[in-house]
Image 1 (cartoon, rainbow, N blue to C red):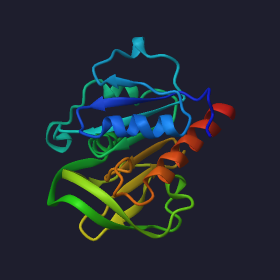
Image 2: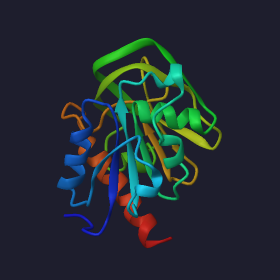
Image 3: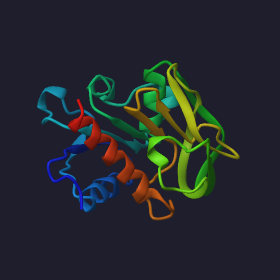
Length: 197
């Protein structure tokens, strides 16, 4: 089903659905482990990609998320989900803050153009699952917005090198219609990066 030699680990930032991300990667045939966000980078195995999970941390208000700043220096594709997305934006020079309209539940997102790498083979409008008080309000230099919703203008982003991706919503939750395809697309990005260094 997938590349059996592909290694993509999930960084646990305290979110309620971290195991779903791990399970989805396993289903796609990826070798994956869940690691605490306090894991020293020296203890990492060689990975082909990382997912920075969501979490309870108010990233937009504290600017901290374990050792994730160190992990973002790795030369592999990285996907940030919810709090991971917000932290990634802040790390690269964007800005996150308390949302004017916190979202909990289903929301409809709209892709910008084709939505970039993560949204290949998905429709321009799709339902996703939200659970956040904070959001990215300014993307970092070198990034572009790839999806938005009525109440959140930066539902997804990717950088110019297509190695850093952020999602405000949770693709690992069943209510996100094309979540499995989105994670599968990230796996493909990691596989291409591994095989074409």
